[in-house]
Image 1: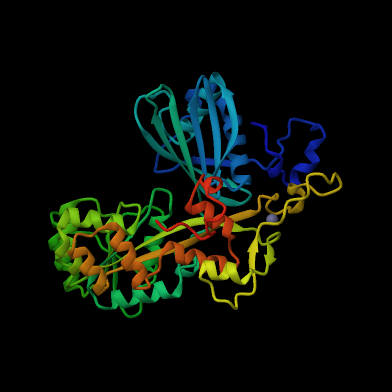
Image 2 (image 1 turned 180 degrees about the horizontal axis):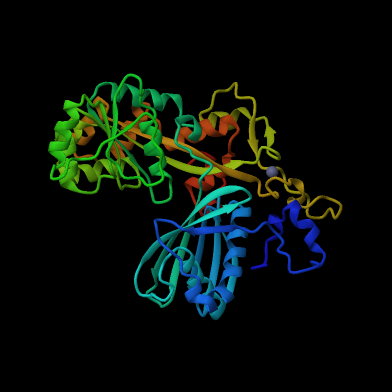
Length: 462
Ligand SMILES: [Zn+2]
């Protein structure tokens, strides 16, 4: 095996391998590599020596990662060693620290499999590997970046091609948000934006938002380039050669378009044009910003407050928190003071939390890993999304006109009863999908222990 597996990750299938294996048979199902993505080629024959030393360890690493539901694999150089970490449900787990020669072979082999040049070490390279594991198709997106301290860092993002989460119900988008998106797009005007920090799933959320538009009532056109993403009931729109954005939007208007899906907004000139047309067409697009408030401020920098007030309708974001394992979560009756502190209805009769760990002084008690086979006592399995939507209410327009102070915007969101991540976290807790502890961790990473005991177990407001 590649490295030590923490006991918590022991799977039932592994139990037979606790006795010495009869042959060199691998412990877990092996991944099948099916060639590089993006039309690249991998010339394994030209690198026979590398294949001999690197292929098996890479295969084992990827198999191990997929068997543990990792969504990201990180290979990083650190003091003459290559460290490997898996990110599972948003939490990094160290997997191995390999001596430099073996680490270098794995790095180069990963690049070769992704159709990249294994010997080129000074430039960023991006590629991907098509793979199959346990009958499920995967795309492994490989991103290779040289480090200032020497060596390279590789990030492998795992995409399960069978799980296509692009419908509102798939990601748990609340009906209230869907209805607001429908109301806004029904006006055939205005801009709806989607933002979030890297890896927060904002591209998926932008597709989901677009899919909230009623395709039978409105004609929706796509101008975004999202390889591998399937849009339903949306017509692709290719600009005529030589046409700029204005001419394309004119053409779309003549085709009676209602809603246009755009590539992520990054260029002030494009943003200006989009907002110029926002009284005749509705737009949905991503914007690079961590929070809706940051997105509004970015827009103001680009096109000024008046255009933002006139054209913007809403900015959406999501945050992923770990989902409590259904097999071992424990129900408890929240006390009235707790409900009051959280602002939950007094009739809330049940919330859920992680199972209580076994008493340390009882040798007969089951260990935490033995408590649940599904999550290995972790006690989380998968993730659940919290949503936030900043809307252009009359109050918000005033706050923006007065200088768009972030604290004042946050206050206005609460005053106008808009959906905030903190508020939505309580919805998810009441649903039983996650615990108060997880919400607290997600909003205050690393700080849970430093908090004074009297502090409320309410997610910290930003
Ligand atoms: Zn469990």
